[in-house]
Length: 171
Image (tube, rainbow, N blue to C red; front, side, top):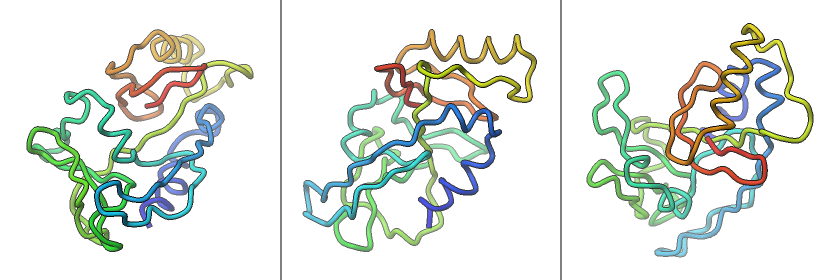
């Protein structure tokens, strides 16, 4: 349900021009290293959640649970399986540690930290992103000049830069 929401409703909160910059990403979904629970089929998504390994690769400060709308220290979901077929791993609030055991997948609490890969090179960057040309140029230049762990704006959202390589910036 969450994956469908991310790739349908959330994805379409971006303008057509912004969506043209978001790369379709092939995500591997291996079984849980700790419990052997199946991760399901690999997926191709525009917007996705991090895996346990991807979350563990982040700096602890980036993994830090968000402070958003009075949700102090809110834990957030990952896409990796948990202890059994009904559980999904998450990043907890205590020391920003990944919990591979997880929590019940149907729970409606916890936070979502969506991830996307933004194309920085290749085809020409589309224009008319409902901003002035100068605003578009500045926003994309800031992203292009950013470093891992920086915060940048894209669309209507603020993102952490998780990785930059081969003309792709993972937000």
